[in-house]
Amino acid sequence: MSRLITRRGLIVGGAAAAGSLLSACARVDNHWPAPAMLDASDAFTRGAERLLLGRRPLARELSLADISAHFPLSGTFMPKGDVYKRFLDEEFASWRLRVHGLVDRPLSLSLADLHALPSRTQITLHQCDEGWSAVAQWTGVPLGRVLGLAGVQKRARYVVFHCLDQVELDRNYYYESIDLRDATHPQTILAYGMNGKALPVQHGAPLRLRVELQIGYKNAKYVDRIEVVDSLGSIGKGRGGWWEDFDHAIWYAGQ
Amino acid sequence: MALDSLESKAYAAFKKSRVIVHRMIQQLELRHPWPVRLWHWLTATAIGVLLLTGMLLFDIHPRLYWGDDGHEGMPAFFSISAPDLDRPVLQTDLQIGSYHFDLSGRLGLAVDTGFGDKDFLVFTPPADWDFGATRGWHFLCAWVLILGTIVYVVYLVASGRLRRMLWPTSDEFTLASLGRELSQHLRLRRARGEATRRYNLLQKISYLGMFFVLIPVLVVSGITMSNSVTAAFPDLLALFGGRQSARSIHFIAAMLLLGFILVHVFQVFVAGFFNLMRSMITGWFAVEREESP
Image 1 (tube, rainbow over the protein chains, first blue to last red):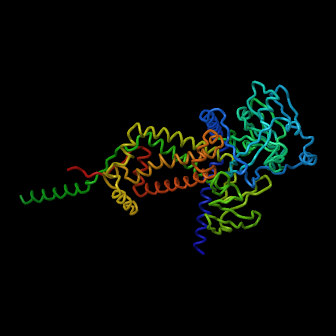
Image 2 (image 1 turned 120 degrees about the vertical axis):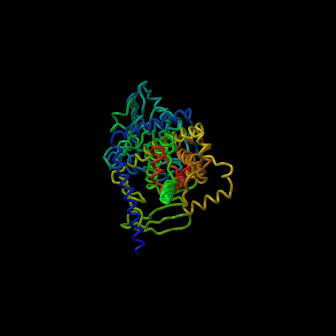
Image 3 (image 1 turned 60 degrees about the horizontal axis):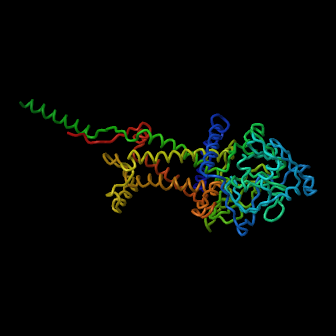
């Protein structure tokens, strides 16, 4: 019994020691120069990848046999509120994807409009920053095609995805952003289908982003509107995404 | 005469005692030039943060799989989990292969994700810890480790230090010498005098293993977890046997690195903490020598 207590004491003591060390690190996150160091490192990663990986490689595509029997849920899996509930009740008939910002022709597209555009189907490995991964088949419209229809202006640099799900933690709606290079990658699609069926609610119905060269949280679910911008400064707290603002997650997360 | 003889005897004894007292003298020599010291402390800091942030990343998904696909509900060769996160006392199960160890109530906690469900964690992260920033710190320090090690290996080769201090000599490279070194290490016999001026065989093997095996394996398995890297270099996935295999190898290699650090620090205490710390901070290392007559 005493051995047990000692061992538990050791574990608790060790965890407390590691914890206090970590919390010292945690407090560092918000204070100069930590954010500047993290941003510089992230920008360096982005530059190094673009330099070393060459021009727009395609993420590996897998076969039907590789599809995961169960695809874990992450983030919101049932958006709250009357707006989404009404969309669900009428099977997204009045839902429109708006494309606005630095575009020549702002768009308002129904799900039927999106289905009428040329589509792409891909079976890829989704990777969460927590460490798990799972395979699914995604069907949707290449984002580059939609941006082409809208006519992206010269000074545009980023594409922002505003979503329908409000995150309980801070009451903000989910949002994410990618740069134009990732946005026009052939495998970056606005997916309305998953594993041969309509995109399920828990995975982001009616429309989610698939950006295959990136990590999980960049793949925004429940996309409501797409805004083309020249700077991320005016979006949220200015770091380019919900996790980036809430949790200091890195923006160019694909690494 | 008698007095003289007595005096000279006393003097001789005095001289002898002085000689005995001063037989071992310490000579300082520059052991570690500044690039070695700079790299050592920069890398030590980077590896410290990498291990801490890596531990936090493992904490949120304490499972190791083989292959590409890996998530809850799939077979893992190592896992720490609890079946029901709503219970007041978690029924924590540590699984290694087909062995299960019951750690109920001793390890693990359930935390609210903020998205209406719960996650299992092995240990409690600090309340103000930003999970999102964990990868940011991990990559920042990975860059320090990668670029630092590349520059340092070039320095080791160019300066001749690799050949002079780290490459085993041909007479060291025998089974007999390896056995001798091992038994001396296991008995914690510390080197003395001239022998402290050079690294022994086991030290050489571990340092070379760090530069040319462990750090490269950690880096390459780490970047194999990136979709964009494997898009450009798909062979990396074949090399490790899949994305999750790369992650598992990454954690196993990190544990080997932690093992290296523990032994390394332990040896510093065994072989003389003050002298070795001084040599890695100021560069100056004291060698004990017999005074020449």
